[in-house]
Image 1 (cartoon, rainbow, N blue to C red):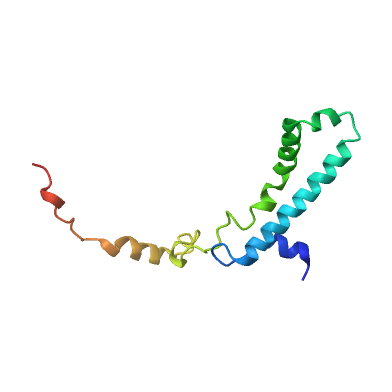
Image 2 (cartoon, rainbow, N blue to C red):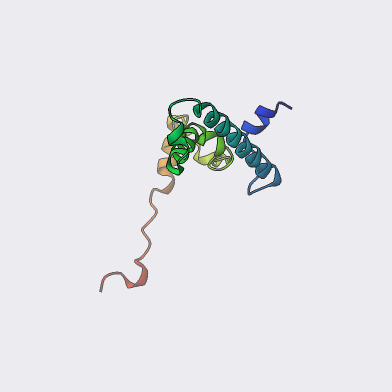
Length: 121
């Protein structure tokens, strides 16, 4: 299996499985390697004194992290449960006029329930 495809494919299993944790660990190691290489290359530029400070290193990591947010959150915020069959978008538009009329008249003539808890006093 292609390593990159394995890293970027969401795991359909719910919860924190060993596969998800392994993928996250590999992603973090790749990000640390990338940040180290970029920092080493920037040490050769006039930015060297700024990168030696804590806030300079933090700004560099933050600037590198912004493009990688989606890469880190592949398994975190995806909705992998399909909507129920009767609530899928577009099903109301596919009903014929007779079916819509039948659905509209389904509860015709049903009386309102009496007020709960005594209603007004």
